[in-house]
Image 1 (cartoon, rainbow over the protein chains, first blue to last red):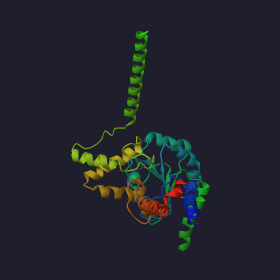
Image 2: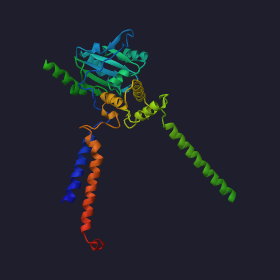
Image 3: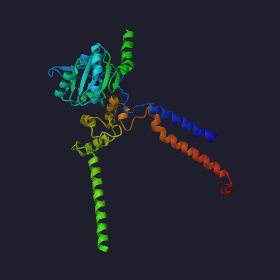
Image 4: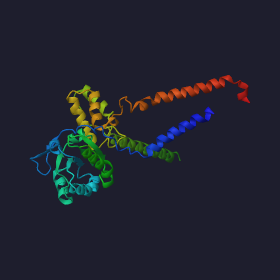
Length: 175
Length: 149
């Protein structure tokens, strides 16, 4: 009896692991920053190089911090969604990651600008603080500058409704 | 014709040599040499050791020492900055894990979410030994003749 039970149990356990593995995306790694304070930064403003954009500007309301660049193909894919989100009243801040200013300005000019402002992270230091490894990445930041959620990859309506919108509503409801 | 045979052998030898040279060249080109480092040999050795143990989050199956991508270069630069600041290897690993998660370290710390990972080799070895011992003991109880039958 034992002789058959052990391999059968092993097979089931292994099968359970493999089954779970089928639905995991290994390129999406859970951020340890969720629930933690957003790392502080102050960077030059893309559209107004003399001015700055930073966590100070983001604080006070729910906002998105969207990591983008003109070399990032998937950023192009999510751009229309960001525009519609901005139109609906969601403040979106950009983190223009390792990009060229001229190209970035042209991108916003041609495709439209969904951002309240974009911070220029030319060397990628702030991106490291936020654990960014592949644009686009989007952080939902609470009024008290807590990171509430992070999405890796292009944002879209289903993802927004499933992962971001409920967090904003539940926080509003608690007040 | 011995002359022709010799010529053929020579040609074969030459082509083998050329192939080997080509392969070696390919390997050399593939082995991305990290040019940046430290003047101080001790610090440099520490640096090289460390970057081989940090995962490139974008490429995942390469360390930041091997990865040619820009983002890996950024992390390497940050590691150098932190080393200059006087952080220990453990502190640098913790710094990166705080931002990217334990996955960034090829040797994650032992904690509730990783105990199975770390203890799996010991558990597997122990269960293998247990099964092996059982089988041996069972067989030892049997007379030899039965096996020969």
